[in-house]
Amino acid sequence: DPDRSESVTFDGLSFGSVGQYEKIRGIAYGEVDPSDPRNAVITDIELAPVNAPGMVEYSMDIFILKPVDLNRGNHRILFDFNNRGQMRVGLFNDAVTTNNPTSAKDAGTGFIMNLGYTVVGSGWEPAVSGVDAMKIIVP
Image (cartoon, rainbow, N blue to C red; front, side):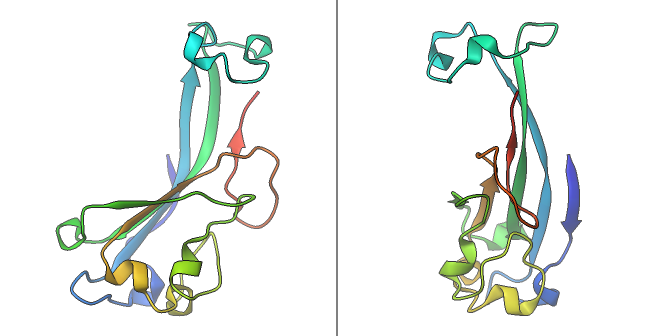
């Protein structure tokens, strides 16, 4: 469910042989089976409301930063395990961290993009705040 995407981001900046990047932001929806023994590690899952098929629903913010032409990338994903809802990819690029990289300034040195990585992030903490914070919605 992409809600904000840019076919070309970073003000159209091109990164070596990889070329331009695009950004996709949206929401991913999922569900877990509270009766599956593998989900027993989820605190209080047995108390969560369930949908008609008996599953516990959740949703989370997602972020994808990828080469416009995937064939020019390195075919590898760098998962940005955010901190308190804030993406960290800017640190690799010697840039200010932002959850909505848009300008050429947000690309910093372009280190990760010049290497051709696709960057993926998702919300995993429910109690985060801030502009564009990556969060998860759980019952």
